[in-house]
Image 1 (tube, helix red, strand yellow):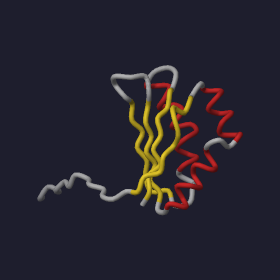
Image 2: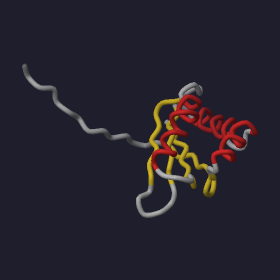
Image 3: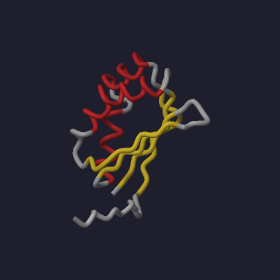
Image 4: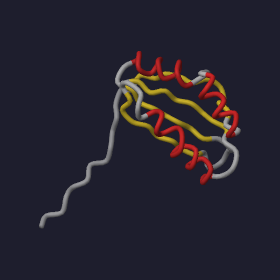
Length: 107
């Protein structure tokens, strides 16, 4: 799997960031070929947010970058919302993914 990581400047607070994700970003990314998962985080000490989107293949990750940035329709939506990409999107190979294991209750 391959992750596309990026850092964003987003005006407003957490509510505006969440509204933009729910209205535009999440519906867009979940339709993309090879999409596996996404994490969106907010830096508590700086005015920036991070995204990490995981795709099945490197080609899927590269295609995401091609269709999302700098695609004119996506750029216009970001500009209208005042959202700015800080630096470049980067593709990273996912080596290991670890999640917590929870046990069910015996009943």
